Amino acid sequence: TLGFGGQWQFLTHWNAMIQLLYYISCGILTFLSHSHHSTRSAIFRVVVFPLSLFVALMYWTLYTIDPALVISPTAEFSETAFFNHMKHSFVVVWTISELVIVPHSNYNNNNNNN
Image 1 (tube, one colour):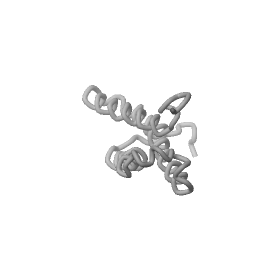
Image 2 (spheres, one colour; image 1 turned 120 degrees about the vertical axis):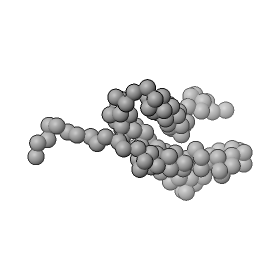
Image 3 (tube, one colour; image 1 turned 45 degrees about the vertical axis):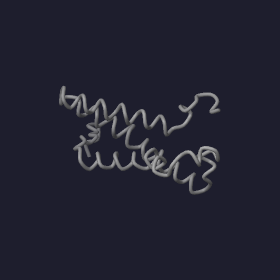
Image 4 (spheres, one colour; image 1 turned 135 degrees about the vertical axis):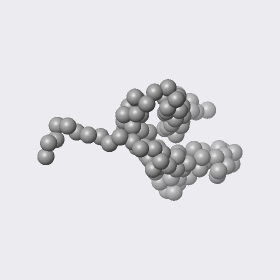
């Protein structure tokens, strides 16, 4: 049993849901309006990009130290390596590919006149 929080106690699941909601909203807003580009860029810059990098780096760092820290011994046999990479590595690939392909607006601090 997973205990309190179930599968939602893992940051990987939160990251997957945030990524899913972000990309669905981007797809919908692309067809509806172009006026939300700065909001999408801000969400990408503040939430999506840092969270995906953090999840991947922390998972693979802990997995390198000791796989039992992130995968229970019973789940290690039921979870394939491909599925493991889908959850923890490919999110970074998608995030970096969006960073390269989609032009995001830069943060502009108008208070700094130097």
